[in-house]
Image 1: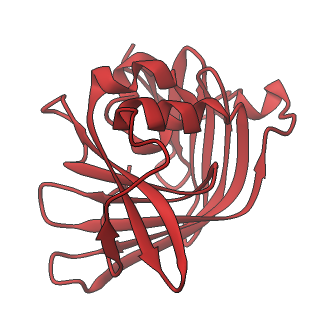
Image 2: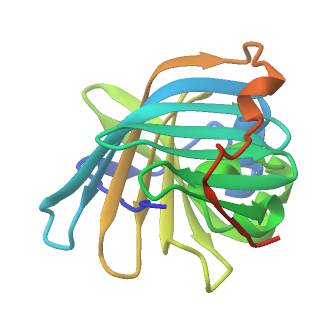
Length: 210
């Protein structure tokens, strides 16, 4: 699924208005304010030496509980669509679509956690919290480490500006890093059910992993 990354060019500092609460509860509270989210994303993957490997861009849609869409548009097209029960991964270039159970993928695919149950986050991840300061501003970040040894990434840094999710930075076991930033963010707007439905086009090879 071409995911990865973490990069920190700012100074980590302690202190928080939520200091009395655990990091998991703080993250749950922030994610709980997001019933839906629409955004444009840019995904930049780096090799272990920090050299650029790939830059992707597209749009994403999330609606709780369990509805998610991630459309890569450049430099190739790919769709990941979750309808609350199953996840479809469609690769037009390969003429292939894979169907998987949603609950098998939430702990493995960082983007899908946004559409999941925030209250169950701590069952899938070990969570710590920090505040990143820079340019006279600060943003709250949460570091998530999957408890599932088969997860696609080793760590995930989730960044917020207020209650707004602004980015995700991931690191995998191979040392590759991926920085995903969001722009043109729209929170809690109405998203039609049709956005989360997928029907494989005629002639596409379907791999059923249910």
